[in-house]
Length: 229
Image: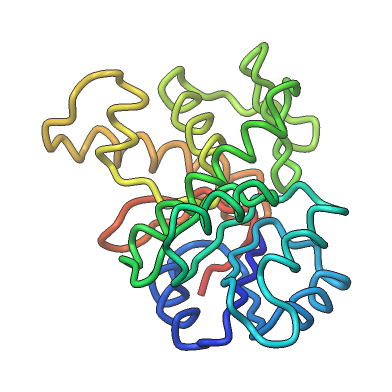
């Protein structure tokens, strides 16, 4: 996942970057619209976060030019807080509008929400997902790697499917439990930990890369990027 942040106040980008450091996301930075366009000419950006008031090429003009070629999610972060400012930005093609000053965790939550929506939209007509050669068929619930069938229990498959639906996003034990078991979480960490451990062991027996990462103190993340240290 590649996100481009555009703001002439570089410290704002650095604050958000700090809060996203545990996610498998490549962050690119630009201080004005012209610099952002140059980056997008060479890199396939998945989501754009842009300020409005910038030198050389402002955020409004940047959004217009991006929308001529791409439908990637666009989030505006701006000190312009009047209702008409928001309406104008959204009408230009932005998907969300956050006013400064902001809470960094809210920005991260909004970004993750757009990533989830975009992923599900792009893949809603597909019955199979491929991650690093691991093929997961959502119709017959089969998991295959290099023509080798991986036998998973029903719970292991549900966990894998949930993690794929939220790829590159850290999920807590509570979130995984409630999504998979469909009941309220009562601090039963062992249930999630044991099933995650068994699932990971089965995948790593046949795969060359580790796709389920433990994020200490937070939870688990399924990643397309092999970023083990």
